[in-house]
Length: 307
Image 1 (tube, rainbow, N blue to C red):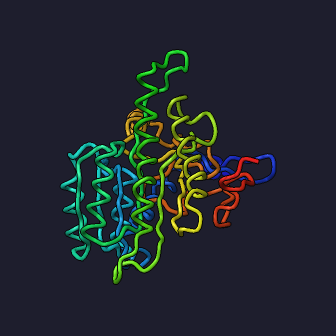
Image 2: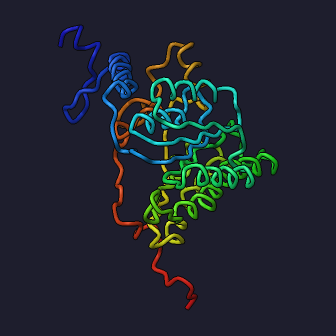
């Protein structure tokens, strides 16, 4: 084997060859550049005419911001955008309006886990647009990794409140709005509620106890609520991001780059890379996604009966 090949590939016992970290990282950067350039393609119509609420849009590298731009690119009619920190809301609105002047944009600084804030926002949307089609409950917080023995009840309560209550309120107020019908605006009950959970809510090892518990609760809410909303055509699903470079994780990424170890980020997963907020199916791997109307979300049960 030449020195060139020896530096770029490592043999495996089964005969496959693994690329050296630096070579793989260079490929990762090229791949991510293509993914993040998805808005350069022609506009689509997957969201044509849809009225959407998105929370947690404040981070310049966040999933909420990336989703907002994608919804606009795909033809959304109106976007109502909320974040607890209003610092970057003007920039986000300007970015959408300049690129997609046909999209109605409203920004709100507020708490996604506050009952009055969400109830009033949904009421405003229905009053102004006559419908609500999508509610993406993306707001959330994370923290360091304290031991369960060192975790205070205040830390626990705050994490659970922000991460779970925000999703609960999205369902509580979003679903009834989606079921309303208004002649000429929305003919049938339907809509999509999307909750941001985490791989930390699936298995241990991706976050501290209180964060993991809050995200497991979000996954459970999606399952239970889908059955509560049976036959309404309002769907509730959760997404479970893994290692994504966002405002919530950027310090770890910056530290790795300062140390010169950026090529190691995400090396433990089969794709050998981390994800970015613009990732769609390109970061979905090794999953069994049920397309069954929600049947597998519950144990067998007769609604309203205990025996």
